[in-house]
Figure 1 (cartoon, rainbow, N blue to C red):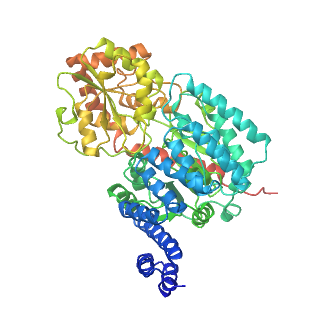
Figure 2: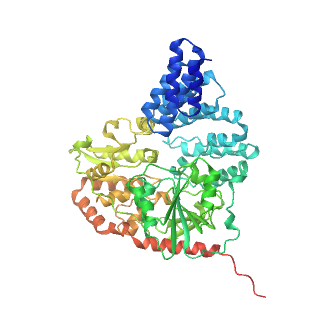
Figure 3: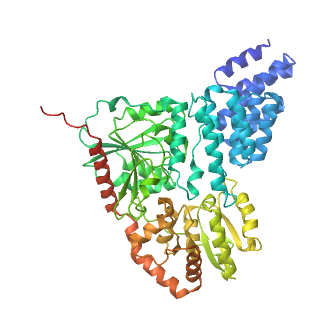
Length: 607
């Protein structure tokens, strides 16, 4: 072997990929062991790209080196897979899928490539293709087949294509779950290719029984999920203060960061020791720094190792573990199967039940829940009194002074803004939009399209039927910096709350900007957030009873300047109860103490 290649291999083993690549090029120029030199060079370039992209966050440099590796060896499977992952990150799904398919022509049973292909197909809404990829993975990796098959069962379009879909998809899911329940598929690595029930929560349907079945299947396929922390057996109650862990993956500039920040800061430190449990690391921002500064201590648990995360939380010997959200990402969901604290609870961060046996309580608001709401939860439902929002919520900052024209909107039109995530816009909203556009010739429906997901085309496809002939008066605004987003709220004549899953942060932000919000409460908590806020404000004039009422209220606010001014004045005078409300924290403290009292061991009987 050429001496350059011997040294290149040694450098590559030590991670000096750039130097190793230079030696390979020298060997190629010398004409010595050219085939081997090209093989080592391609590997070095691929590894260099991985190091720069995965560990250094330098995506363009990573793509450059993956392309360079493919120029040397067009059949380099790892380079094809890694370049595909880069394109997937950039939301270039079709280009990524093409690269994965190229790699699979070379190695048809390559599991990492198939996993990336399935994820990209799912993200792009190609659910039939994703189903085929996941079933192939289940056959290739029987030790983790249940993970792939559960994900396949839960392939759900984020944007609901029509009004029949929510019922139809549940019928499909139940059929697939039944097949898994009678089989013996295992899940030896639950975190490797996990899934959540996230899209099901937006359909306006009670998911309790379905989510209990999904949780039961996880435990059947992976019994070790029900792991118990060593300190639980000998726990006799708090040593001094109540040690509470507040856990999430989203302690940053995110809706969860916004709603968690005040609770972390204002829990009474005479009663509570507050440990911030970060599920995985994230890039610091102003919100994350404020939250971490407010906690008594902070722990970051690994996001790629379930047992290591459980061990780290177990070592805290917590009295209470309060998940701020369960169901938006896999780690919180899989951790919740374990018994890591005597009391385990969650709340409205993702406002749906978990179905998980080891999740004890769901903290909600009496304003959000109907009398029969206990039927919606597998957890014990705790209703906090007088809570317009389940957070100590700080008033938003000053909005930017942008004008309608700067957003591409006309001053001659009336702006009906629905600032929710596009997957919240269910087919029932289409009829409301259509009625508004038909009854107000100057109406414009304005929506916000995210830059990181391909949701807008799916919604526009549905609109092409439901809003046929009116699409020219529907506008999509690209995702905005926060102050500009607040500025857009101020440009609206009226805000349209979504049915089946209301706004929380968006309604609070709208009230802070003084903009009226029209809402139509349903039966479940997530359909009653804005109603609960209005109830706490003692102002319910903009709460509709029917879809017809909703449209009429929206038209009246947008077209009647005097009524709009009256609503704005009432909102300005009463919305203070929603912001920086320490009474919420006090009620939360009492609820947590009551939960703990219920879990305390009974004193021994005196004979």
